[in-house]
Length: 617
Image (cartoon, rainbow, N blue to C red; front, side, top):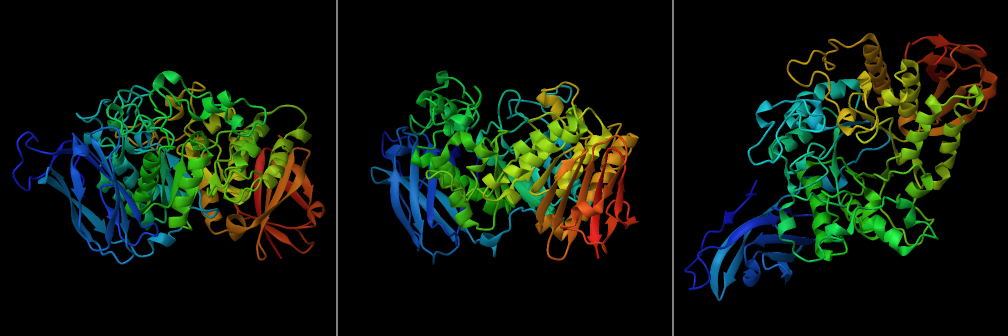
């Protein structure tokens, strides 16, 4: 890969006139290369190097036109805008810098051939189940890269908030496990460079948008992860952040424009009041406090109103899709960026890849706030998003509430039933990503009081209701966090990911009986789900909860699945006649988990247990 990090000395192409200096120094050229055959024929190349704004720039290559050469406020940048003709061929060309008529240096830029079928790649969809993992906390495949002399934070596995050494090779080595469990998509928390002095393991403080963090591995390792995942039938989802970068990003000491950030650091953090974007009574200062504040002091808020930065970020996302063969993007802090750029960004990606998928994070318990971001929303004239999917926090929060709430047994499932009734707000609720937990919230098993019965009820719901399920690494073996709200503990190491671990969840060695039961339960359910057209592609019909039991059906024209969630401590007997809209007297049932055949007018459901029944004539 023609990418050189650090100070790059351009080869001189002639004598340098007196007073110009002996060399031209480039520190960054981004994107490092591009492709022919892209639908969008425009290309921005941003160059950073000492004093280069005083240099002239030219290139000559058949099928490429220079639209403009922009000289930003900083004397150390040039931004080149090109148009690539549809007939342009793969190859390379020299970008030549000169001053006072003398060549000061050249940079060789490559155009690669686009892979066949790239534009029609299929993103993750309701037939998939996503496995979310933190690369630092899953498996250590290469201990030699745990620390790096060029990186500010070294590994310290004893520190819950520090680097633990997990890496890309560790993930690659465990793809067999991920596949065997039944997962078909893999969301890995950010892996691009995060060269921050501390707390850099979480990955959300980007210091280089075009480089894999060396503590995770190399660019080639990331390509290997993508290709090997594909061989295992697993789509790779990249975690990206358009709202902010890290305070250690290379451009923070030399920004192209004064408005590269929305506000100076002393303007304070965001107020996190996302409702102000819809609130007809909110004051302008509160709205600005949401969008323009920094997420935290180490995450500068980028200003996408700067057209050059906006184009830079859009191209970066497309570059990674094309380079790494991605099957999706998970977009962090989606709403903080604001609707204008989110429209531009999502539509640019979906225009280039119409069957792709992006899921945005809008962390709210209010479905009305989430719905407005989804593609096809018509409730606001000023919203024109192309975003296919969002994280369904309202459903997650409601399910936890239903599993843990006390009171009358007849009311236990009602909030969940009614939350699903709000689906009329969404343009496409079946493309929402649903989940019991993730890296930012307390572990599912912790939240439900470490109750294996409630665990099975919750996991069954998320793997059989509408939407695209996402399971957080370790949830399959009942990982917990001893202190609520502690991110380091929420993101604990996966058992068996490090040599010498006393418990190995990859092999099952050392798991408690409940952990083994949970892992087997999820594995069987996940692998069954892959073959169920009713769950992957079907419709949903649910009945009002009654006496602590919630019943719903997933169905197509040829297949029906009945799901029964019994929260009662004791067994219940269901009269199938209540469900005559979906069941006929001649139907019988097969228990998905046990294989048992059930017939008759009564279905016996054990206490605190889910039943998943295939309905057959």
